[in-house]
Every structure is written in C-alpha cells, then in structure tokens.
Image 1 (cartoon, helix red, strand yellow):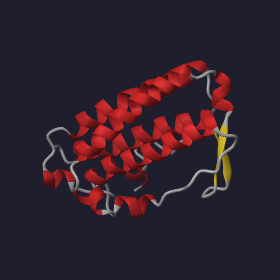
Image 2 (cartoon, rainbow, N blue to C red):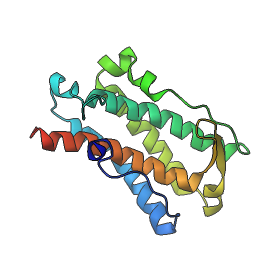
Image 3 (cartoon, rainbow, N blue to C red):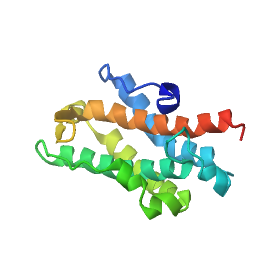
Length: 174
C-alpha cells in the first residue's frame, strides 16, 4: 500500500543547490503539460477510478493538484512579501470531496495549473538565493517552512500525484 500511496517515495529534503533549484523549477514548469498528457483520452469511467483502494479518483487528484497549487502559490508569495506570515491550512480531504472536485471536468483544473505554474516559474526564475531563505509559519504542522524546502516540496508534490495517475494507467494497461 505504501508504494501505491507514495509511488515516488516520501518527500526528502537534503538542501538546495543552484543545480537542484533549477531542476525543481524545470519540474514545476513541465508538470501541467505532463498532467495533461497523463489524462488525455481517459474516459469518464477511468477519470472516476481511484488510483489506490480508498484513494482519490484520477479526477480528484487533478482537482486536488489545482487546489494545492492555489494554496502553495499564495503561501510562497506571502513569504516573499511579508515577514514570516502564518499561512492558513486547508482541509485537503474536504476540498477533494466538494462537488466541483467530484464532478467537474479536469480541464478546468488543467487551465488553473497552466496559468499559475507559468506565473510561478516566471517568479522563481527572478529570485535571488536569499529569497529562498524566507519562510512562513504553518500552524497545522507547527513549523517554520523555508522557501528552499518548500520549492522542493512543490516539485515533489506534483510528481507524486502525476505518478499516481501514470502508475494506475500502467497497472490497468490503459
């Protein structure tokens, strides 16, 4: 079950070099197109298939990624523009079970991903190393989160959910 839940492993942060930062930015930049390709041609039945037992459907995963991106982009910008802001957590499970996440076309969330990621990459490429030392406080985990750590997490998170879909397609031979 662990391999189905974490197909690329759990997030691990070992610091951020210039090479690592650039790799994460490229991963973020490429994710919307990869996600679009991963769900291209899927039927309604396939979109409504959970990626693992008791897991979200493919549709919910795509919508979750858009929901998380909205929140993560806001957190990133808050940390850049305010001194150590406290961010608001969101109920991921609750959001994944609202009618828009259950029924809406994934295309709506792909459009969100394409727009926000394009802006985010533009912003990321403009930042200096010191900008990644800025941080925010996340009350749900009770910790300060540095933007260098968070950048890696965002790249991992996108790849993590992309792998949920691509691994499901491989397992079911879609």
